[in-house]
Amino acid sequence: MPRNLAAPASALRQFLGGQAAGGLVLIAAAGLALVVANGPLAQTYFDVLHAYLGPLSILHWVNDGLMALFFLLVGLEIKRELLDGQLSTPRRRVLPGIAALGGMVVPAIIYLAINQGGGALRGWAVPVATDIAFALGVLALLGRRVPVSLRIFLTALAIIDDLLAVAIIALFYTSQLSLAWLGAALATVALLAALNWMKVTRLSPYLVIGGALWTFTYLSGVHATLAGVALALTIPIRRTPGCPDDRESPLHRLEHGIQPWVAFIVIPVFGFANAGVSLAGLGLDALLEPVALGVAAGLFAGKQLGVFAATWAAIRLRLADCPEDATTLQVYGVSLLCGIGFTMSLFIGLLAFDDPDLQAQVKIGVLAGSLLSAIAGAAVLRLSHRERVPTPSRREPAA
Image (cartoon, rainbow, N blue to C red; front, side):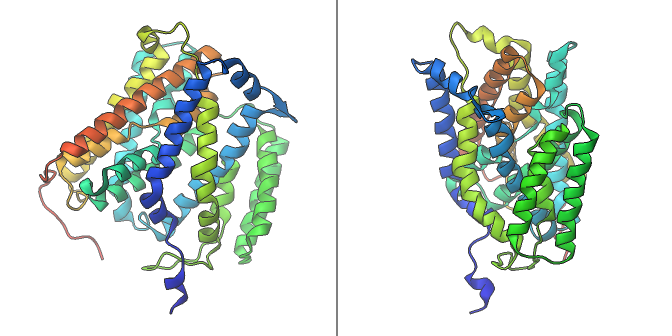
């Protein structure tokens, strides 16, 4: 038997096949956080999160440390899909790329329209991100009602979405820089790139140096989680066209190794630590606060409008083909699911605001917008009929 046939299923296929379980764990963690934050253990919950363990609080260790593993996995997914997967050719990048751009611009405009002037403007990027875990979890729960082409489309869109979100964090949410530590971080990245160039395939040197990279990045003022993305981009990949699973590829080995830990520990812990918001004394009017309303409207209205309109325009203008066997209503349903912005939206919100009141508004808006998007998207996909998305012509994929 050829060795590639004995390799484990790719992380992307595991992600598509087992995402419902990971999504349910994340939902349970977020729900538990809300229960604890509004119950008799609320004070203990907040005290533990703000207790210091060494130089950082536990909440900072979660958001700056554990989440570096999440961003490492994001970086590995981005690199693999760009070099050896669903985004490996320009034609495959067109539709999800255009959809991702539309799904980032429109929510930002809606947020800015609601929050004109003042420090609240810093939250413009909160509603622009899609939570791939929740969105694919909903699709997995819907089973065969959704064609495989739309699952691939949503995965590719979310990966590009993550790439754009990482760029936003690096450009707009970086504190004052220490040039000395930034230089040390860049030198470390250069060392990792040299290991790749020398064709070092053992993972241990990359991971040890990656730990130093995280430290230097944190001390430089750049958000430390971006060290995970930088490390991922230096991990060697063995390209295997037509057979993407290769246990001898360092990138594939690392991706398979950390994916369960990220899906079932890192992200649920992050959700539990950050979704807890005290609702004491809050009514429906809390959702009408500018930041909360801007985030919720950006996710629910902005995402569906931006993704669907951009997708429809790309197909009508013959820039890309419609996902195979997908109907107009199904494409719209997936566009709704893109409004589930839980993990990355909460993360960006914490970077945007230091004020606890504004952070609470972000959490309320993220929870409301994501919940509405999940319910509406699932309902539309359940009711969808097999009717083609209108397109002037159907061109054959490029060879």
